[in-house]
Image 1 (cartoon, each protein chain N blue to C red):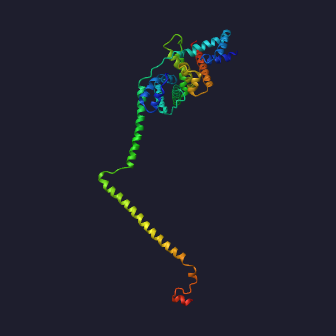
Image 2 (cartoon, rainbow over the protein chains, first blue to last red):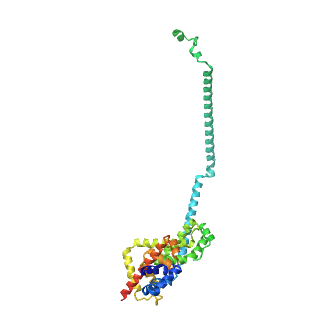
Length: 165
Length: 187
């Protein structure tokens, strides 16, 4: 087995127990024959792995939670504040005046309604009259034959007509 | 990290602060430790942890229970920590800081024997993590301190499992070379 490849495995899979039993056995057999690789393994284990094994576990200071909680609460408040301001905007959009102005507001509203309705009705009457005139003229045009206009010997009986005819 | 009940998560999604506090109690320990190892500075860690929990609160509404909650929290933590480190690196003079870290790490490690000196352990871990780039650091923290498997690291960081392997290999090679440099300086 190639010593360079073995050293690569020592630095990773072998030292970290990421190898299957068969591969591990193969490396152990190699160590029995190759002193250099065995020494390299001991160096790696003692120099770069062992120092981390007893790393102290540090307790986080209590102040961190207080700061986190404060920030989270502030965020929630901001969210609530946003909802409240939206409600306020909606309220102002549908503003109801105070009793002192209530009567004048109602009067104004009634006036608007009355004016709108009256204008609507007068327009309706005018359009109906116009429609009746048009219908009368059309009936007259259809009932009177064209020849009555073209071959009317009697004409209208005016002096001017008589002069030209 | 213990499993969080689905009901608790649903309550938080509905805005229940008490349930959120329960989640905080259950997860803040590992969130703090992972963030601390990646950021490597207590003051900045507090800022990152705060950011992580605000992210959890904000994004829990869109959590669909398709992936594990633990993996999801690990991902948010690692991403927040990495982003913070990158932001700090942009603000500072990166090359200068890296040089200073090497000198500082060398000074700390000189004369310390890993096996014998327990009180120096934290300083050694800190100096080791400082010489790694932030992506390698995240992999080392998740593997060597949190004990995640390659598959779990791959799911957490959303990277290919071979990328996890490569990052761990390069990180360890860097640490070995750093150890050799320190020994050379001692001699």
